[in-house]
Length: 253
Image (cartoon, rainbow, N blue to C red):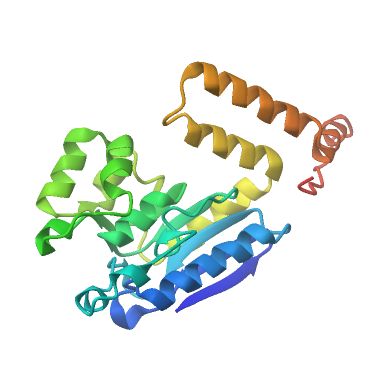
């Protein structure tokens, strides 16, 4: 249901239920949370990539499970919908989307930190077509990224955005050729993993906090983050590597 693979300091997590368009059922939600637990606990993993097997990234909730009265199984206590959308992680995750990400699938992509999408990708919130409400963050995360008016268009029509339009609106970081989303997402992850992991994690946290914290709070928590990073072993390594004109050997501590 969910595969986990290491590529150096990058964990590749893959939804693997293509016969059901990678729809989220209880088993997938538990497996996704377990994969994130593994990623967060491993000191040698600094960043994750979320991909999917098959032509559809994720069709969202398994409607058969909902119809059978199993809607509560599609979320976990720690991770929320799909074991992912509310998971409080330290490490960034890049979505590699090479097909349709709709409904809860779009919400999972929105819960990632960056998105690399192929030209065959599309992003939508189709819940209104089934008398449902997008309940896993899409209705408040999407307008923060693409603006209220276009978010309303997506949410109220149920029609998806193309990868190109999503890129122009700032939802997607890179648009690539079909079949290349995972390769390019891993390349982006490796570029990030070449940097000091503690600084990357603190920087991610501060950028996300900017969505809701006021200026005074942001100044305070930025100072605290700076102090934590400055006191780490990796700061000495980074400065020495610069002076000695060599590549730093980060330890993440």
